[in-house]
Length: 68
Image 1 (cartoon, helix red, strand yellow):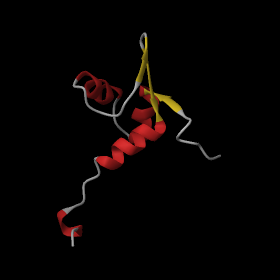
Image 2 (image 1 turned 90 degrees about the vertical axis):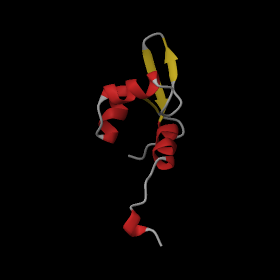
Image 3 (image 1 turned 120 degrees about the vertical axis):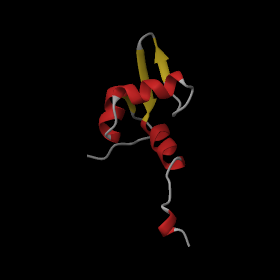
């Protein structure tokens, strides 16, 4: 099954599982005003999957040995 990342909303727990990070990592990013855009309704926090992917790609680091 393919997921359309442009139309998929995911919560903090799902993002943590997908990125193999902790839920608190994403909570800390939000508190510091960092990380991808999100939607907040009461206690519920949701991310568009496409925004998370874009944010991760923007923070990709190229190892020094791979630069030409």
